Amino acid sequence: MEGKKIKKFIKYTGIFLAGFFIILIIYNLFAGDEPIGEKVALIEINGPIYSSRNIIEQIHKYRDNESVKAIVLRIDSPGGIVAPTQEIHRELTRVEKSVIVSMGSVAASGAYYIACAADKIFANPGTLTGSIGVILRFPNIEELSKKIGIDREVIKSGNYKDSGSIYRKLTPEEKKIFQDTVDDVYAQFIDAILEGRKNVKLTKKQIEEIADGRVLSGKQAFNKKLVDELGDLDDAIEYAGKVGGIKGKPKVVKKRERKSIIERIIGIELPDNVEQILKDQISIRYELSY
Image 1 (cartoon, one colour):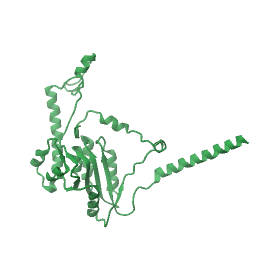
Image 2 (tube, rainbow, N blue to C red):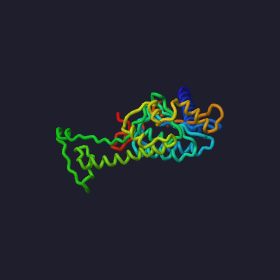
Image 3 (cartoon, rainbow, N blue to C red):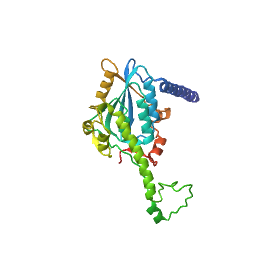
Image 4 (cartoon, rainbow, N blue to C red):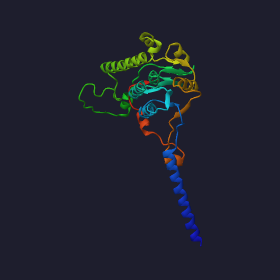
């Protein structure tokens, strides 16, 4: 009799767990995240920019959605690697709908580069922005390797193939090569600002006067014509609704972060190993140095 009860308990427990997993899978696949009717899309860029894929996917999604009348880009980032920064900027310039930027705590360097693609930029008075410039860093452990007795042999196809090696200092010729590269990427940044801010007639000379890596407050950036309005995210959304032709308070749609079934069950988020790897690599960056 006792054995029958145990078997019955196991049977119904199995049915319950199977049903729970089925419901969880269905919810994960089909749960809606979009309000009905005309709306404003909100895309968020948070933290250093190491990859463009996720943001570009959202840009394409809302660009092609006819019910989305304008896009608000909320930026809270110190900038990041040049190539993904330029990819996001390029995709935003191709969007035919109005793109409005709202700056959070910080929107500096590459984050400002991206903001220049917008039709209008909102910043809080205390937002940290600016930091217009390029940085390329090389760690050097030459003295340390000598102390602990690490040696190396290098076989290379050209004089500059091991430029930037952590085991030795740069030669004057190598410094010149890297400086030329940094200067070229810096000029691309200036050109992006010049093109993006032509509506306020910001001249190249005016840009270059503040494009020395200095950090500006949102209020200072507004006075320098780098920002169009002082306001918060709600102000940016309200403005986006107006330019998108939406009457009344606009509905907002944003990407719903979908956790895997494992993450839902154990209650923690799994780390993004790709970003963790990228963040420590040598790369040329539009980034606030910290």
